[in-house]
Length: 290
Length: 295
Image (cartoon, rainbow over all chains, first blue to last red; front, side, top):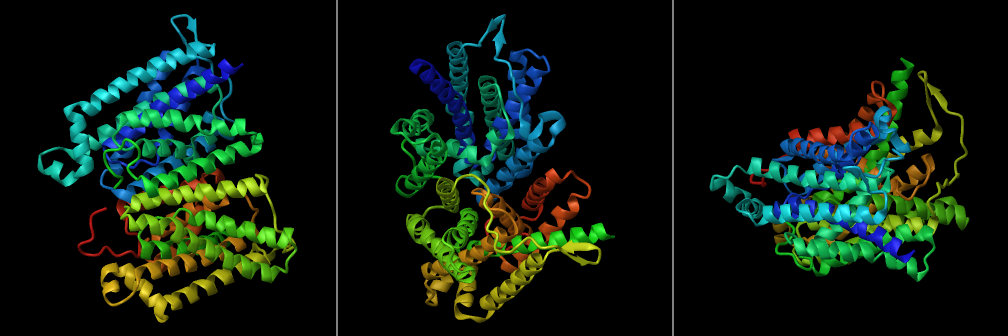
């Protein structure tokens, strides 16, 4: 019993790590405060679920979920490229509302608020990941690959260019960097990883509905990136583990289950406010949020 | 013809409520220069306070209304001095203030959820009455009351900003904070005033919404999204602009569902928001000042 619960938590943590690392790439390294990140997660989840339910093999829908999210990330980057600061935050947030409204209302495709039940567990080369332990192994492999790609990217010369765009866009333009293109790539890659995280989530929970992809679900992700600190992959991973496990304590203190949900949100909100007031750089952050 | 009149009236009612949300929001934005999402939670707080005072404690309705507005105004003031003031002291950017306001929104909404539960509540002061016929369209007395109240309130807000000393000081801080401080206006004091007055208007909006619709813990999020969309359409730094934007938004939403399924009502608002942010980020009445940094 206990081990099943721990495996469940581990899978959630691993999926969240992919999601938070991908937001870190856009927000921490490139300085794009993307409040629409959860929409890419949703797009990935729906793409993968719909394709698999239509009979496509898992590995194809998995990769396509990333690619479709990436296309949306690229499309979003074109109009928002000129925007900065709170205007960028609002525009990306508007994007996530539009995606939510479409998921909710395009009932012929998404079944709207009823959601998509019965999403099959992944199977690869005849092996079915129906048991949670094997699913955990699959997600760990995905997170390791994602982590190495993102780390490689951020340590590369391209990663330095991303940081230069964050610190001083005008200066990097002066040095001949095409900041428009760089920001588009960063947002598209970030969306790709959010998309595959969404695919894993859909195939793990086996049921998705639009309410899993609202701005409220973005709060833990945003909080983790801020607590871990901008432009720190290590901080992000540690913060994900701690902040996903922390609210689980509420269950053991003996809160009734109807209060655990809002109590979790209160806990997150209070941590967010405290960290912004007393430690705005987060625990491992290199730069402050501008 | 009657459909058009009905949509026009529905648009005006929605616009009147949005205008109350967006005028308070944009009053705060114009002086403090950051996006105060928690304004939505302030509205929800107002609606639930009235519910508690009137429907649970059985207080006299009008006394309840006055107390609600006072408490709501105080909540706004409290948010400013407990969170935002501390952040400003640390020279936090407007992005940090935005994220903090997000945190406050979630905090208050979750507290409401714990105290009152997730089920929908009604205040039930005004009995459901038969609508009046007006040029082939139906309008209830309460809806007429909403439109009149918001009109009176917005006109008095306009005169308050133009004629009173505090109103003038607010406009001075909104124009140029440093110069205002040089002539002896304390910007912190003005921020307190903006939060108190803006939140009092939010309190009235919350009461009207509570009478017209039902109460839900998440009602504030929906309203603040409409409120800031309206502000952006009209020009976020201008209170009259925000009011104009609110009526345009209300009409656009209601006439839009003539062509689209009604579920897309919200999407219309976000598409408008998106288009304005891209092509006219300063809104209809917002003026881009010289030397202002590029957004």
